[in-house]
Image (cartoon, rainbow, N blue to C red; front, side, top):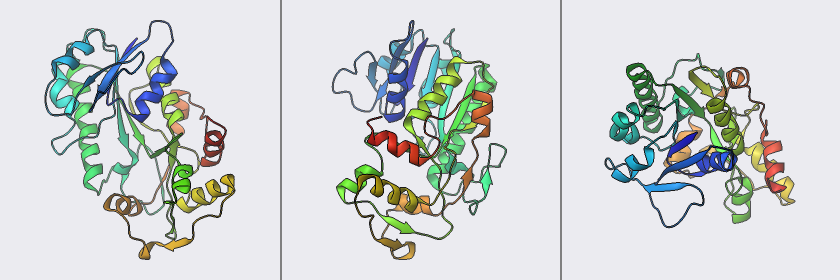
Length: 284
């Protein structure tokens, strides 16, 4: 297997760490900046601004492709610039596109699953929805296998409430009825590994944890694990939020992951934030 990752960032690097060392596995990908070696991973510079000869060279003999770069206003740059190259790969067996549960929009805290119609409201989520549709069209037109993975907020080592608590930037915002899902980065890697290497159906999968909850619960639990007082409660209406943070708090939903478990055969390493945070604190 040769995996090529458009966007060799946090999730893709965690997947690579899981796969590196397996017999017959090679990995390549792109970064917006290339400053040195990435160990066993061959990386080319790609900023989404045009077709790159270096990327085309690294794509040779690719069997699996993961796209984690965010779409721009014109759509998914990887598809725009390399659709013909991907379609021409004779051994291409799988394409995975990382999207967002934001495409469901605001559901007032109700449960959603893969059958729930998308109704994105933010520009960021609308771009993801359009990119999903474009990759589905690519699959129909080329006969290539494409799976779409909708992700919630991602956390893990170096990117968790522990980091904001230690930095003094954690907030305990209170908005009654607000709930989010989240996913540990190791569980993203677990699900993608299963999707790539097992006989799994095409289509759409929510990759989320088992327990959507109020965001302040995660902050309080993280503070308790660190043995520090939680930040003071801040009413949502009194909070000064960035536009991105405000867009997250404008939507509330509970996302089911039953299809991930049944179709991909995934049993989460960290089914809730409690196991995830304890694992991070233990060095996992």
